Amino acid sequence: MSKRCFLVLLVILLSASQLPARKFYSDDPLPQEPKLVSLGDVRVRKLGNYYDFIYYSLATPGELNTKQPVVRSKAVNTLGEPMDGAWYTHRHYWHPMSLEELGRGVGGTTPPSMESPWTVVSAKTQGVTPGFTMTDSKNRRYFVKFDPLTNPEMATAADMISARFLHALGYHVYDSYLVYFDRKQLALGEDVEVVDKKGRKRKMTQRDLNEILLKSPKTNDGKYRALATLTLPGKNVGPFLFHGTRSDDPNDSIPHEHRRDLRGYYVFCAWLNHDDSRAQNTLDMVVEDEGVKSVRHYLIDFGATLGSSTTRANSPRAGGEYLFSWGPTLKEIASLGLWVPHWAFAEYPHYRSIGRFEAEVFDPGKWYPEFPNPAFVNRLPDDEFWAAKQVMAFTDDQIRTIVKTGQISDPAAEEYLVNCLIKRRDRIGKTFFAKVLPLDLFAVRDGELVFEDLAKKHGLGATGPLKVSWSRFDNETEQKTPLTGQAGFAISLDATPSSATAYYAADISREGDVRRTITVYLRIRRGQPDVVGIERSW
Image (tube, rainbow, N blue to C red):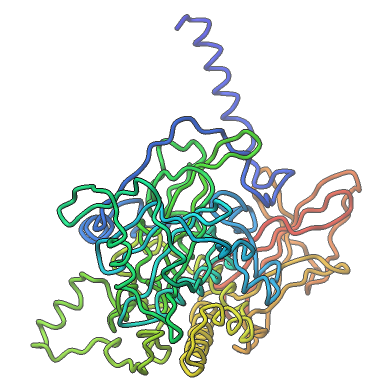
């Protein structure tokens, strides 16, 4: 580097360091992710079935919140919300969905055509839960999977129901349908290969197809019931991890353990008992929109939710503790086997179509997936509140509508599942609303700062009495100057020229509680106030 170039670079760096750091910019709060950078080559990631269990049980990957100061969630806008984009989309809580929309899920309009036989183009014949991929008469491709013989309806119902809840909660999931068919609906495609028990590929036969069906239960009218999921658009490049980033994706810049949509996913998994929420049940797809290639991140495979473990009824331990944990093991040793974990006190009715699912022993703050998840471990009270407010937004009727999509034939079993989800929902609200000041949906209306008290709205008791203190906020230095004579939530701020932009902060707390506070930032622009930022403390 020449001396002149060095001096120019030095001037640029010094100038940049002296630029004022702004808290808010003119386009805040951002509703969508910034414009994506088009991808180059993306490697296909492949993980073994036991990757998550071994790695996350024995190691502590990612940056964990084990020291002070803790790392707050990133990939959020100034309101603390994830932005619509590759990971997440705001849906039911912010834009209430109709019963029809909730039941329909992602699409709901493209079930497999029954006009002519389906053509089986690939298959999984080994294992307890085999399945196959087929195309229908309209050349649409679906993956078809079945229930275990011991538990008809269980895994397919769980998948249908949980996919619709997670879609309404904002995640990218597949379009799924329950299908009923007989053997003549299937035709074997040409040159379809299967892998035998020794791992060797060979041409698939009609016998192989029949063996898949022999492992699948039939309905009372002799048909096979299955879940058909429409193939996701784009190119499959493998699962995403719950820590770090994809080095080959320039848009994936926030470590996954610090994403609010993945930290908050803990609460949703607790509600639906999705203890198998691992990397293998995620999928990254390279999609193209207006000439820009990018990675879209999906959640998939929900057969092991609610009371199902896909191949059998879930274990009573599911959600109660990790598969491997020193704590419970040492307690059993120290007590000579007399110590009984809390989950062992749960009672389950015998519904084969549900498996093991309950709400009486369920403690949302002490729920565990099968093994540690870096994003879940990093969650903070504001992450939990972000998720809990969405769970609480589902009414009893809306929960009942989504459960009906599982087409559980026993009315008593269906009602039991509905009641469990309602009770678990209420426990989630009670547990996580208590950790923060549960106020949300801030807005300016008729010259007043308004909001919803979610605890009061959902029958958990009023949050008040509240107090508020107002300050003028310097957007360049982030300094607050208290306003005197300002009380209540009516906006009566000091004079600001109509051509100028000014910022104010309202610090809201409960009387006698200085820990749980919310700071709401207002921006006055062209004489009009709007909410530009929200910060929570606890």
